[in-house]
Length: 77
Image (cartoon, rainbow, N blue to C red; front, side):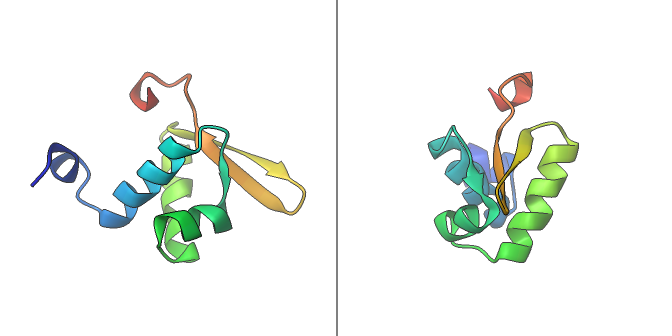
């Protein structure tokens, strides 16, 4: 077990965190789903929870919602 697996037991959340880390300008929810290799519904749920925790920020761009790390939060650095 890696330290990340210990700290973040959810495989979906780990994959999503890695996808967001690799794209600092943000990803649409659909792109995050493809990048992380997980279902759109799981991405939507996880990003909503991460936004409530202050780890990610989201903004509308056309019909898409872009999500990215909120680098102002010390936990997201």
